[in-house]
Length: 474
Image (cartoon, rainbow, N blue to C red; front, side, top):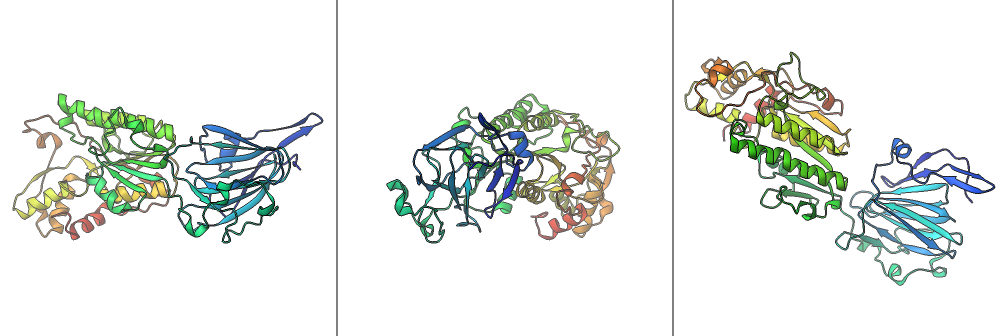
């Protein structure tokens, strides 16, 4: 019997993400009324903003009608319009709770959120029962489904009406036992730009788990008009865009400008559209070049952007686009150091070859190591941190490029006094090609990231580690 007058409330279960909701039902002589799904109120209580695209109703005229245990690669909001059911849910996702069981009765005053990969089944306890469910994807023959036998001995569901006495389809009776079930894998993580410096660091961080997918332009062209159908995007939970145009000076040329806008803006816009339409978390890596470097303090995530050159303009435009995606992380970095050619390796090589370089001493910032970016991305995504922009660099005292060069010389056993500090203007005075303007202050504040539990290592310590492993000199 429907319970009237309850407050909207949440009841956690033993299956992660499976949550029962008490629904207020208001009744009088005419009947009753309820808000079956109310996005604002329910998300405030922790319901995922799961974006339903379809509403289905299953009507059952007889007591004892029993529907099989089906797990689909989408989320469900299950409720009862009329009648009453006994529901049984079994976790069929990969992981430590595989096989966990939860049962309860639902009437119009209760609903349950069923996350992707949790098997769902029910048995009607009253005639003329209307079972309703919202789902956030459309059925597809290409999707991964899983099923469990209603009579599985491991799950041992205590059905109110014996299965021998109820109406069940032959197909549901033929489903496998738990030992033979194919678990639903987690949503995929797609890493773009997988062969670049950051892409290689992400490969090292995430490894070769089956749900991690790596792509470069040859295997997935984000500028293709067929991008929307290039993957079954509903199977993806996260896209990490580690691809970008980063030739700062070349971006000041007509051809470089075109290429920078294509990669850093047009391509990002295509990814943002895919992420928004499919409920995907989009991770976008940005730069200190979105700022003009004139502040006398470290830059915060909410400081207005004011890029000086073409590269910075394209990165700022990409940030603005990504910020419209409901689920997004913008990772702002500075002075990136990874595998391949970089400032630290150049300085180590010059030291070894006996060359005494002139190095800019009026640009101040911190190094950012690509493996720290990869760790930080995994930290934010894995902890489900609040969406938005985060600065991510090494910690510690800021330094100039000349300071860092002296430290590289010192750590590699050479005299740091061989470094001569010069102004930006003097350094580029003999340049034969275009020179992009640089921010003089590239220091990014780390308070927001650290509030999520992230622990920063100083750039001084990270530089020691980088050189001691041989990566800075190989």
